[in-house]
Image (tube, rainbow, N blue to C red; front, side, top):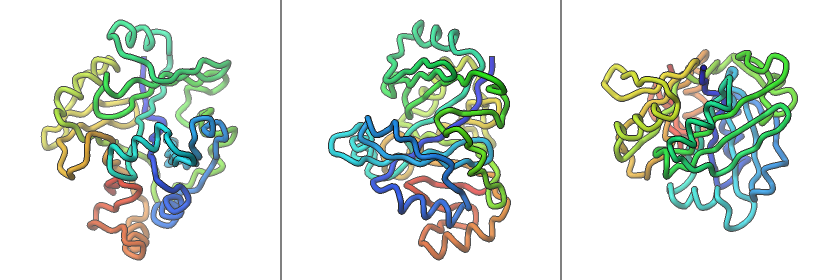
Length: 256
């Protein structure tokens, strides 16, 4: 069984300004807007980074889960780590055996998902999905949440992929062990000793909290193709942090 990073969800108070920043700084383009999230009081847009999909959601009405999450974390930021698996049934059985609650689930003809309760996982929302049908398990295969033609929005001349997502945690070792238990993947360590969950195409890094914000998805490492363009645009928009980092939608974006 394999597990790969397929989608990263962010949450913002306002959608369009964030999309403008993502286009200008990272050269991304929207491939789809899902009307289905309206039932949750949200609007969204999905933008490919290589073959990983970046989703940004924003509340469009009062008292939504997304809005409450914004309040808890003190503004825009990371929301969900969404993975793709090749076999969903054993993943669901594992979650049941561990007593983890499922917040939201869907089982359709070509797509099955399972969103786990963050209080039972720690760190962030952790979602495990399976795409079905022809070519479903290929790295560039179909991905139902990103619409019927996600590759139409794929741009790889500025950034070409996601190498790592980073969860900041009150107890990184404990949360990392829990995610490892759920994913059934042994942990590794990065160059400075932080625990890392190695997925098939990327990793999940677990670090202590250093920015004063609560637990959550706080950073991404991106494979940069045109770092100079990124840094120049980030400076123009007030999003520059250093020559290896920009700050977008409440996220530290590390440039590799």
